[in-house]
Length: 220
Image (tube, rainbow, N blue to C red; front, side, top):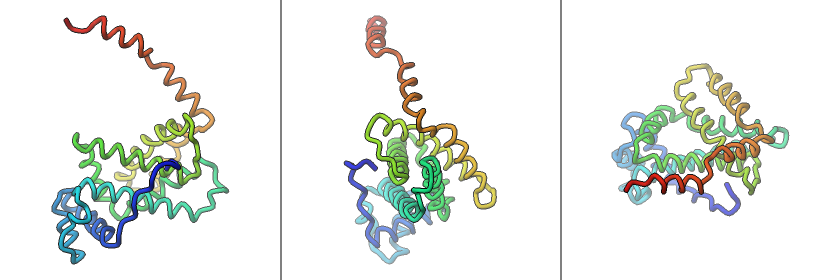
């Protein structure tokens, strides 16, 4: 997370209990508003709307930030100084998925929920937050152009890893960890990141010429 970004507020005890109960219900009932009422009832509370006034979007956001936080806690106990940056990122991705493992079916239902057009913005924002926290937890302190390129390169790797993990039946998700390693080897060659991004920018059309072309061919 960038130094100038405020970390998400930690959940209260009641909020975390309701959140985890609701996620367990989501595995069977999907991410519908009724899972919050069911979770509140499980926890002996009257109304989950007090904790998650925005409903399911608030619940999803809280769960994603909670999983990010668990990843950071688990990553911090490792000797990161002994690992190269790519290995730290791979470990962070693995720990994030390990955190989600008890809720795998709920995550499967969540990917379908987030694929709906009205939920795309929330999904994109949470993915961006997750990859930012992965890089920050892995020791990245970039504040230049590479800050953005690193996160832009990791986001599709993380999403692909989640989808692969959801269908992985190998023991201990060994195939997923191999997949993560291969994908990171492909994209996170740190010295080449800036050159690759600049090359991609060079291939974009000149914006001035683009707008001139649009004006030339605008409808009458």
